[in-house]
Image (cartoon, rainbow, N blue to C red):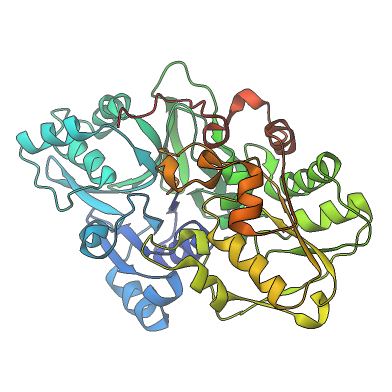
Length: 463
């Protein structure tokens, strides 16, 4: 999962707005970020750096980029790596947007998603003369195929390339003064369109429009290519047949910001409905206080508590100077230690109380285990755990960094074993798959529930 952003305006100096829009997608990727802008001659200039937008694009950098990156069209990206590698292996030279060369004309591309089984495409591009900068970037494979295409028109090259890609992808591409948006034929990763009085905008989530005073228009269709230029929509077409929406349900559960709309459904409303449905499916006693696991448990907790008539108490305090999302941290980070730095129990609230913690999901167990331990240390009499999604038993190969069954608690342990041997809670209950689908407001057949059910819209990789 990453954040992608694209904008074309009738006015110069679009770089500042791209940075603002990309900042509103920071929650989708915290490892690195980048922007690319096309000038009046079609030359593309990029700037990338590791870390958060506020670090990589501080006031001094923004002032310099305003002069260095003039133009009316550009794209941006926030990186969440799904390859599970760190250090030099984390592809520092291929932070998005990645530049390519199409018959002497520069282009830049940013990607949200994950491709599978692309080794053959990589070798083909190598033989055609493309020199890869990374050993494992799936995004660079797309750039390589476009760079080595024999088609003379860029959109024709794109139409020939897209059907060869297997996996999940939402792309924004900068070519000359055009911004091109692409969604895979299942629409697994989100992409939407908005506009203000001078610009048309593409973004992973509609929350990116608010700061720019832009209005949400619609979601990009599965299998759609949309071309923006000179502050307008120039054309739109389907690149694929047999398109059917299979939006990743984990976007509703965790990834997306509550103020976003996904395929016409409010993320906030989903979390409210999920909390209420969970309360009906897995009720709990009356002499209990409900404590959200900040920040992901908020919204869920109020709905859960309201349904059962229970009080909500902020028994956990988040260090406001700790900005990161624990799930998005690289694999070599000790998540349990990180949680201790990020969240602190409020002893005055939980001491002697029966506590029910509300979580959005339970994946590897490192976070929940630490939170339950905090409650015990703060003197809670009982600690119960309710999870607003089903047991996660299957790996994801479509853009979420959980690629193996071995790391998923529910894939190898029963609910009872997780409760007693891992998280050490007095009770543990999950939302049902049916309840999860109902809460989204979308038909079940329009969701990718693969990590919960093992049924994917795309055949899993052989490995």
